[in-house]
Amino acid sequence: MASPSTRTVDFFIVGAQKGGTTALDLHLRQMPGVQMASRKEVHFFDDEGQDWANPDVDVLHGCFAWPSSAGASSTLRGEATPIYSYWPRAIERIGRYNPSARLIMCLRHPAHRASSQWRMETRRGAETLTFSEAISATGRQRVSASPAGVHRVYSYVERGFYGGQIGSMLSLFPREQIHFLRTDHLWNHPDATLRDVAAFLGVAPPRQGWTPAAGTSSGRTHGGPPAATPEEIAGLTSLYAEDIRMTQALTGLALSDWLDDAYREPMAP
Image 1 (cartoon, rainbow, N blue to C red):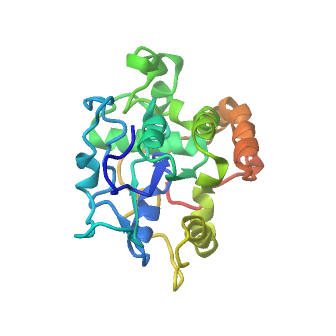
Image 2: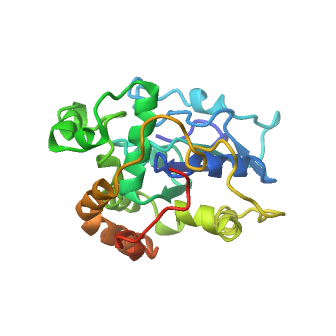
Image 3: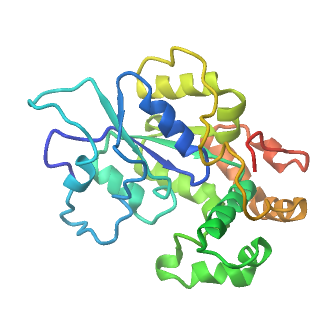
């Protein structure tokens, strides 16, 4: 699938859910030379209602302002839908739409990411199981029994196996078109992390210091269900251990501290 016009979205924040994608999206909206979609999470490339032999790209393009005349534009256009990295064929569809697209993936410790997703779905009323029940073999059967073995709500554990997602991504896009960052580094070292993002996109770096925006999904304290217990985090970390090592090898990010029992996130639970 190729874009039928000169209008093409340039980059996509493809994951991971609860990985600081809202904070990154908000910052990019303030960066000169960048235009983000009119709403976060357009959910175009994971839309199974589309005819993917002839998709209606106007659904995507309608979320942007475009020049009135034909010709090159110096504006970079991007959108953030964090399910893309997890959803089957979404990255493949992006590649068919724009083989030159740049992808950004925010990586959060997978056990803490799972807890954060469960808390969100519980607050929404979409989940009634406890976290322990939801990540158990029985809870995970709700995912494996779903079409294609994926689920938009109950995939607390499954979304955290980044290695397979990244391996698939690297089979579809050149490594130089993909940027990986650690969510905790976005909080602990925001200026350096955002300078790296700007350099990757080829735009001017931020003009002033930045701190995580109030109201972003990973940077505020919510009411509602408690965060996972240390025992639950340790159990999931053990489950993810080999995948964390694989993710480190594929991305070049140092992730060994994620395997340490003493690891603590800088973001509010």
